[in-house]
Image (tube, rainbow, N blue to C red; front, side):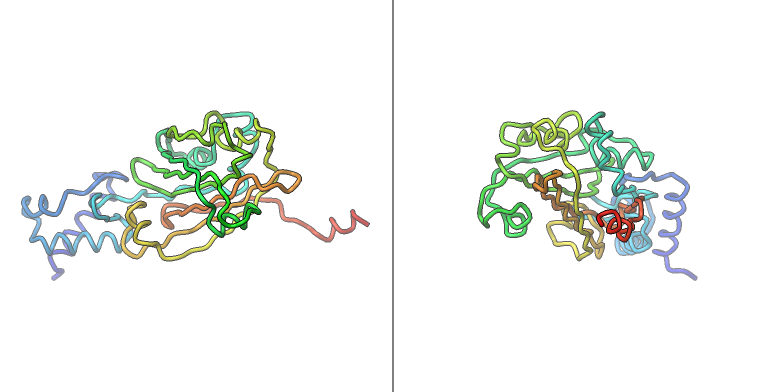
Length: 264
């Protein structure tokens, strides 16, 4: 005979899979389940922990136990930076991801703060500045249906962005086309970029900010954006909840031998 917590976990799992609890919806608080006769506090707690271990829910202090999204968001690779999206249209990268995933979005899904700070060592190195030089930091928190998906902080040299919308802390993207359109209008058209990914354990602050379940790792992104002449116009650090994204890359396979032949 299965323990009572297992029976309750199975009952709730069926309700989640049948759509009675939708992605992003919070399960009843433990005391409500106890009051409804579902079991003792320890029984309900054990059932919720089992659902979390099975990947059906996330649990965090202050936010309760929330049903996970059924399918992770696509985090596009090269396609998310297509100039036709931001130069000729009004899409920013996170909106391109949402559209590719068949998901809705609101501009209010992105909040931000902007500050002028002394550049940390990794930022100074990426931007080619002496450590301690001042830079603008544009910090964003991106959510889907109220649940955070990732943070992204972009760093800029003041001379590239002073007086532009990139230093305006108004929530949401930096106007039509977002940050890359702002740089384009300022005379800095992006040409190529480098992205580095690394998986690691989340810090306690990240667990709270991203509402991560116990033990979930994060994927840290470092993105360096260049103009055609090699000028670095943005260095960004993102922290992504690992289970909330599927990273997708579709690109032409290079053939460096042909490139060398063409140079001879």
